[in-house]
Image (cartoon, rainbow over all chains, first blue to last red; front, side, top):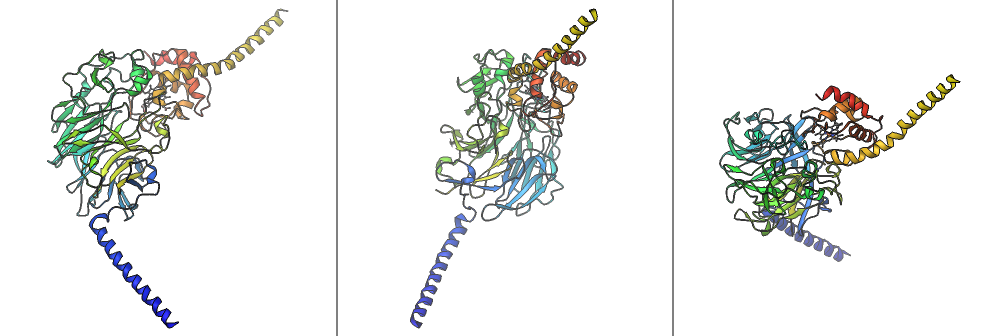
Length: 433
Length: 137
């Protein structure tokens, strides 16, 4: 009896020692590479992803989450389209399992832009851009007193979101969407001609560049960086080639306004949602032309005498990627991490909010797409990366979708975060093989 | 005799009018549905639910099921102003629909007021005509 007891104690002790040795090993592994990367949800947060990828719900019901920013600590800043609990920005802190257990709201204005860089949080309302100083742990020091760096941007009842991104030289780029579909005398009115030259382009329909550290900049003190862009919500700086890239929302309603030139099907597919590479002085052609991704041509807008075939816009840039019509690209991110396989490195992720004007065809989008890039140029076709946000097999109307992807951000470990302004979910997509 | 004839005529006329009115509503709704598909569906969607933050729903809003005058005025004039609809604001313009004829607008609105879960009285061309005379110069 004693002997067996002794054996039992001995083997238990041995086992314990072995276990703790293993545990030590695990711990040291964790601190070197995996400490920040939790396990995906069993159902991958309801998403369909390429093999080897997993996803988790970081937080649900955060509100109408537009753009997001992730700090080096793995905390998340979210900009809301409607106030939640009276607040327009939330700071979210996830636990080690990746799920948010602490949050804090501030800022009593709604908007879209959210960006973290070099010790500051940048946020936009539909008229202004603010920045908040961050402490060493990337927490906002004084939530009640941001610096107002840009003011007086045009907001006129259409394409109101002011999306922002930063370069590496102290500039912030702000989209000012055109308050019009195609610069007609009467917006979206059948038979109303396009105005030439389009007066909207003086203060909207383009990208403006401002300094990150100057207060109260206006159109007068900023740089009119690019024009001829109807509405941009997704934009990002590509640090590989030091250049701005934007995703334009193409014009709507070709069939409604010109039923004899475009049938329902053409109107659903046309025009392309375009990615443009932008440099100082870029002109992308709106409202005079649109890009037809089936003919691969710049086509004269029917409001300006076009018929769906006449080409025009010799002075306008060609897109670097053309996607099908109306998918609504609301987020753009160049992947600079190393967690994802080589194919994805340096490539572009695009969050498509999903269409509303493809009826009677089903709506389309509601996914995150990927375009491989090499040396700042697309090196392959675009593909769907993450799908299933809508929770439906067919979306007849965007209001039916459970979730609509809107913003993108990269975590310190290389995870990709996606925000959803319909269901209020923050997703985290990880690669684990 | 004259009196009797008069009452017969009066009664039959009266009942005919009522009958015509009741009989007209389903036909007006059917015509309205087709017109809605052509002129309103893109923005307000097949379900009438609209597009979040962009185009408002036509489901039990105070405009749709409320005062006819306000509703007809809205549709004739459209809107480029940021007018809250039942406390929510929308970021898009609605083109004026005054290119549609009185009977077309009556049919569309009768359809809208009796679809998507709405129930409200029919709108007849004379309603539209009266308001057009005031709002559209």
